[in-house]
Length: 146
Image (tube, rainbow, N blue to C red; front, side):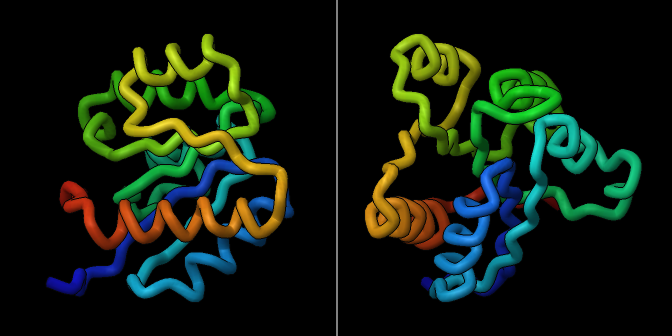
């Protein structure tokens, strides 16, 4: 059955090129979605906790999280998400350049829903984001945030 509701996605990414590519893939996608973008970990936590300029922000249905972020890194962001009762059910996809085994283990220990190493090749990156859309927005049943 087709998903009729709009999916809110929070992209936590400090690389403008990766933001643009991700926006393009989701804009052309099959599933109606709104992609919100924040550029650092502090902003991500403000968004998720509805602080500052984000007091009216929608709780995301899905978070795409880079690890190596300014201010507060993605490792800390994931830990706070999964340790906060109102946020812990939000699926978090770690999408990062790090392929360090220590990072992979730590992210799964902190309950990341999946860990994807970003390809450096443009077309492969687009394919990865498209695969995320196909799987997480088409196949997976996301928890309602209402």
